[in-house]
Image (cartoon, rainbow, N blue to C red; front, side, top):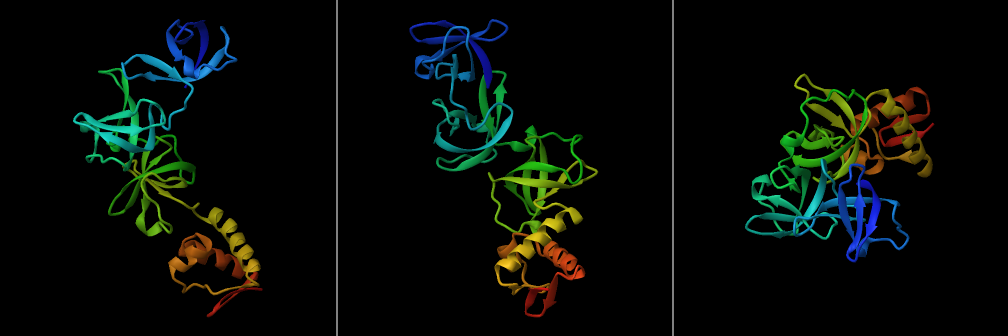
Length: 270
């Protein structure tokens, strides 16, 4: 998005100008009635169907140097076109498709400026746009995740719109699909700079709020839940949205504090 100054009004729209004197047209259909010469306005700038720079008040679903999850609206001999919330669709050349795209399906893509054509285009070849070194991340840090690819080990995710991370299959206790945006935590930064992430905080920090969640659920169910150390992970997740490992740590903490009683038939408030 760009903050530009309204410079002059014309029959086709208002020309906006940046601090260097570059101008771009904001077509009449986007010009607010209250806009006057000298006013500043936030717009998105891209090229129209005739490759002319044009401004719009619409904010696209994805901007330059960002990843997003977009739907294919058409496929032609030159490539695919994605709905990104603007009148002109976002182009994905065939060579930038990790697999051939199909109309009606959604894909995780990266939006970038093609230097040869001076246009914004997209690519689903995600890995080549991710940084190799996660120098600004720390273990335990909360991060934004965008899931993009299933693997034998689990699910590859984009961390903070910049790095590749992995959610391990045996630590996923709810359905997660490519395109899902999640809050996660850095579990480990390996020697090869690959990042292991988790959907739950690690260590004691994770136990206390989950222990409170168990207490709250017990109170809401008359002080009893038919779950214990031997319960199936699926049953635990269905009730608490936490892993069995986290559940066991949390009820262990509550048991040591004498706040719950653990029996074969389940857990009781003490």
